[in-house]
Amino acid sequence: MTKREAIFPANRHALYEAHGYSAAIRSGELLFVSGQVGSREDGSPEPNFERQVERAFDNLKAVLEATGGGFDDIVDVTTLHTDPESQFETIMKVKSRIFPEAPYPTWTAIGVNWLAGFDFEIKVIARIPGQAQPPDLHYRSRSSRSRDRHSKRRREPGFPTPDNQP
Image (cartoon, rainbow, N blue to C red):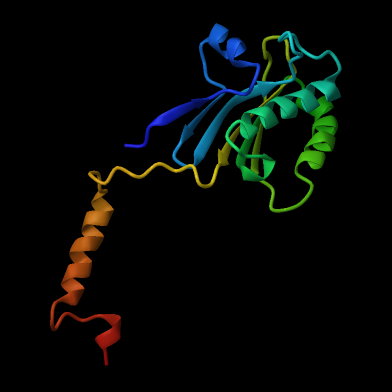
């Protein structure tokens, strides 16, 4: 069984401990990053919205870098917005600096009415190559057992396969 590993960026571990969650969890090659907000060093919200979005991405970058990863490793993005209609243009401006070219990660944007004093939050799933733990060799899915059974049958003499069909 793949074990999960808690990841914390430098200098922010106390913030996560105080609230009882991890900045990210690595499971095999996947990294699941908790929602990152645009907080100042003291944990308070950045009042300028564009700067708040930039700080959220800065905080995300710190979590990714704690694993040896970066923005290019992100495969899925979920963002939360308190006023999507008025914030969209600013968010897209910052996002285009972070992800300047295709292929872009998948992205889901959700409007919410409360983010604990913040107006933007971003959470991601990233693939961090070279960090995978070996799979549990004792578990095999039903479909893999079925494939094995069929592949053995194909090796039996006289069993038709695409290779020996007329």
